[in-house]
Length: 317
Image (cartoon, rainbow, N blue to C red; front, side, top):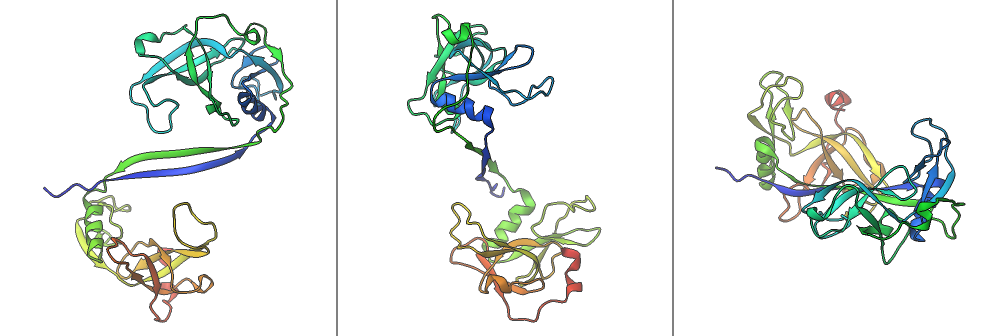
């Protein structure tokens, strides 16, 4: 049997957002070892605090301090913690209702095993040694059999004002997974190893798709006939990139384009080099540039041919 190709991949996007006065007070409070909630018009205390009542949609700003102790309302055991999770050893995900609050906060509970966790158990915050104004300032919760904090027995109004308040956060979103390309794309990748580009032709509409997908997206039938295309092609459309990407050693500005290889009915992505970025244009004829031991073209450069007529690639825009 042929080797099954697979590779680890990660998709990551650091989302930067500003904070309103309620969320700013909550996160700054955690830095100062203070847990804040917000009181609704009917007297409920919501933790974490929100800016609008989820029931009435009324704006909320009446902040109160609640306890750093609380009660587990439900839980699930995590046998294999993943990268970036609160604890490196097995732990419980718990919903904890802080003393003085009417809602629960999701976090980790450090416990020796699932037999040590139960709904209704008492816990308290374990504060992180270094706090920056983030939910991770709560390192985790831990079992606790003492009395409730004074703030939990009688939630006290709080101004929400702190010195050097946190006004924004960066929330990283990341997905780690293992990618397996399948038959069609495995053949495409294998051909690239020999510096060839291979697509597949639909037996119904006769269009050649590059990279191949194993089926025609228009007709919905399987594609098995392989067709070598290129290596030259035409820039159908493009964009000028002015923001440098993390871990990408390419100086900005540069051009990223859709390139329709000769013989293909689908444009693929590629960087255009060997020409000033402001001279790249639709219809520009290009060819691939390979680097030693590369499995795909490093970029495409102009061939010196006359530009392609618009009518030859307008259906590929």
